[in-house]
Image (cartoon, rainbow, N blue to C red; front, side, top):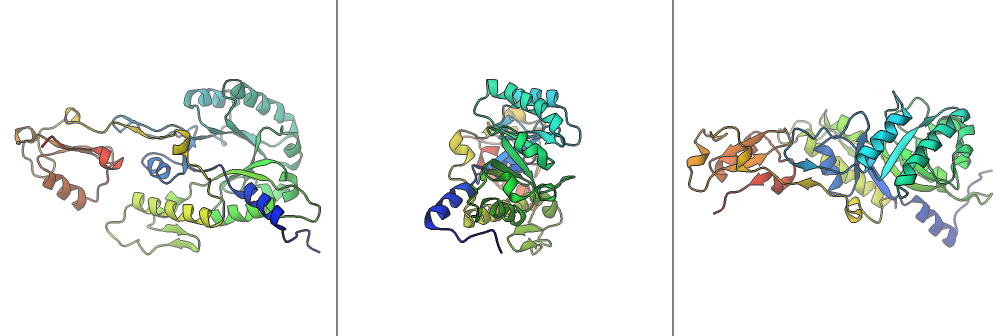
Length: 333
């Protein structure tokens, strides 16, 4: 006999609330992190990676989520990284044995003393660890690339009544986990509260010209010359957002609502290292209006003698600005 029940109206409302996340994170480097923030994903990175944004002029992107280097964990180092980046959400580390819980909780308490609103995640990697982790810390439910996945050592009942972040796995796999952790039961167990999910697998498919859909990977744009990896990732992000919206998981608020925004001043003529127009070779300083300047997601800053040269060079080479219109300097008319 199944332990699951069809839900009443009140239970259905409770489950819907439990399933709606507070954040959907996408951890990657710039420019992909910039593109993820625009539609409402929480950007971030693993502590040993960073945004890799130093090649760009005057670009800053706050860290929404900081993941730990699970292959080379170090609690002291991670706490230092937290204070350096000040993320909203942080994955402190994985715990395999109950004896290691105290050290991770101590690290969390050190962070909470200065950042009481931070969402701190600890990832249990064995069933006995789950109940030892304090209730005011979020449990990380491993569903993606990991040496030990949550469903391999635990049952859904072990996670009920706790705040949970789904770590990795494609959206359908994450949704399956969410449903298992929140559906009504004969024993009237409270659902898990799904705080967030994250997955950064979109870039891997995009490198082969494939974008993500709810029905699987689609390679219909693989042979299109104008479709770049960045555009493919952006298209996949839109598909992922619609998937979570359709299933009631997409958050009510976005990182922008919480004040997380890209800081970017854009290029200026002073950033040019050469006087020659990138397109035609004309001296950009001898034109009537002065140079047009564009910064691209390749990190290159190019100067042009006219808008026509800018437009021609950009489109012929399938270039894309790092942050849209802000990335182009137009001289005064």
